Length: 238
Image (cartoon, rainbow, N blue to C red; front, side, top):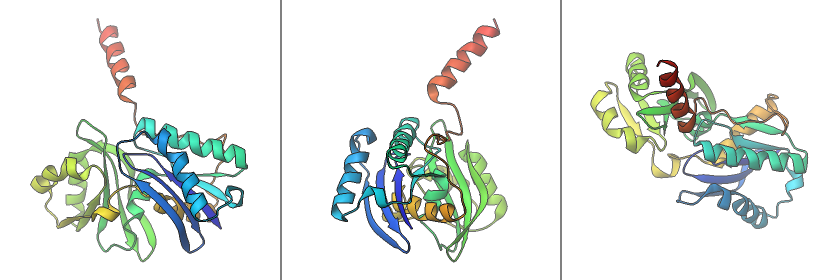
């Protein structure tokens, strides 16, 4: 089984190819460039380096949200375009699940934190038994106060990762009452390798969709939509 993984849900752009038990190639960049400029060239480079014929892949796994609205649209459009052109199914991998899967096998509860602005975070809670992931709290968009309270109530050691760590590090230090740690640099951001390998599991379970069916999962309204709704509510109240 050969899976193409794509992740442009955050600051990182990442492309990977996984085949059975091997990660054949991965190209990950954490730099201030537009994903629309980088994702396809990165895929072309990976394919060239490993002599990959895209027609030989079985499915396309994409980080389907939540995350950056623009980044998710770029990843979704890329996956849909490839899926239509190659006639391959799409595996919609929840972004937070894939981020947690970077730490597969970790002894502590895993808590990804993605910065969603306004003290909000895209997050979830996970536990690993060997290579099997248990979802303790499904990915969600909540305040940092809510997820830290949940962690404290559980009373277990936790490890954090994601681009929300530097944003919320001070808050965590002030409010967490359980032992905690932070993932190292090579594991603390989105990676298409995790999307591809987790997607392979989902593919085996039949969790696939067509390119026509695929759409990102934003979990909340965009800033523009929120501002428009706020204006409408103010106007209706006059």
